[in-house]
Length: 323
Ligand SMILES: Nc1nc2c(ncn2[C@@H]2O[C@H](COP(=O)(O)OP(=O)(O)OP(=O)(O)O)[C@@H](O)[C@H]2O)c(=O)[nH]1
Ligand SMILES: [Mg+2]
Image (tube, rainbow, N blue to C red; front, side, top):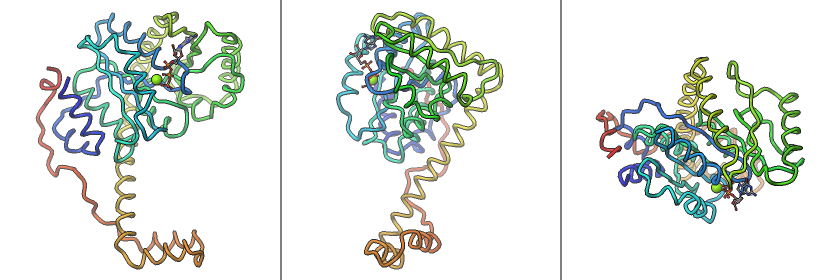
């Protein structure tokens, strides 16, 4: 357990290449993303889902990612408390990641963390993200199955669901079915699904809308059954393979974008010509678009120092990790 924590910290600090070079990964875990507005009940729901996963004899890891906040603040502390009762269970691993610590892009760091947990032999990985903005979507895209949580009684909340959320949801969960307006919210969601742009295509899969009361556990067993069904549909249609391939592609691009960013910032620091172009734009003597054009065409991408290893030592650390 301590070893996993140490590896995760290194992955977060942008040492993914060094850490993961030494791990043989097979992408076996079912990665389940859980997103939705702050306070909708994500952590409470995950806490209850853990029970069902364990009842099925599976090992489970939880990654709580907060892309919006640079601080590891109250929410994360709350998650710890909420899932505390699983602390003694060696089949459960809970970890929070804050944007502050994740150098090299949070989405990339999340991918690396998932690979570490996968190599450590966790069967299910819950990925909880706060909010439903673009950053959260980027993070949750790392999941095989995405649950979008919605609070009842908020007609506006449905309106606020961006097209991106619609596309990414494999299951909608109306959590807080004990609160007024849950039925109406289910109806609204159904209407929206009937009209809206289609979700990520999974052959033979209709996006279900499930109502739950996370605090009492009502509806969670049914939800877990549906999550497993979704995984089976993905497997059966060959979609799992496609999603994972796309995910790896996005991961490589994230890593490249980050290198470009670092390289460009480095060049702007040391290259006098680029600096003066930037300065001219800052002082209003040069149009920003023109400045960007010129800087881009004169920029010579530099090799930026990374922590990558030139020849990864391939030894399977799975045993060490599962100790
Ligand atoms: N009445 C009711 N309260 C709920 C339900 N689910 C969660 N809550 C309560 O809502 C509050 C927020 O729950 P969390 O699980 O922390 O929500 P979250 O989405 O993880 O919150 P963030 O991580 O801060 O975004 C807690 O006080 C829960 O007890 C529910 O189904 N019904
Ligand atoms: Mg939470």
